[in-house]
Image 1: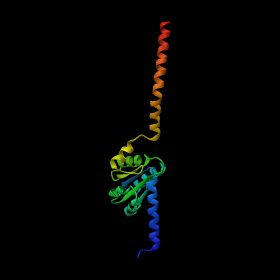
Image 2: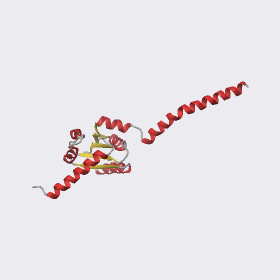
Image 3: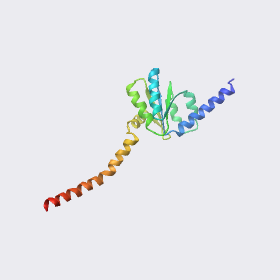
Image 4: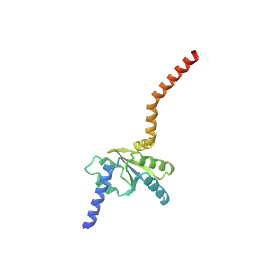
Length: 167
């Protein structure tokens, strides 16, 4: 018979995982088999600096956490050793960091994840990782917004110079 204390601890762990899955803007699931301790430590350091929580979780606990939610499709990728990265605020950070790390270390394999409450596959996670950072996107938007004003100013300047040359 299972100890009541152990059952209580597991139920609490499932509740915490479920809360993180539903509240996190993005969650990335990866297979970390083959990474050595130094590599995992470096990966955890990079993720921590970006405000991303990285945990090795039991597949059974994650499966229980997805029960009764729209995230049950996540169960299909929960095979083998599983590490889960929960983002704090930046939805792109876990995908970007894990994808870059996977390019340098073949042992890390992205499996899929959850973005904005929807289960996505490895391809969507990689596409998300290729997006520019928030600052990059804002600077692109700013340059697009400034372009008409800049062109107008150049046109006014050219007309002014032409009139001065004609006078």
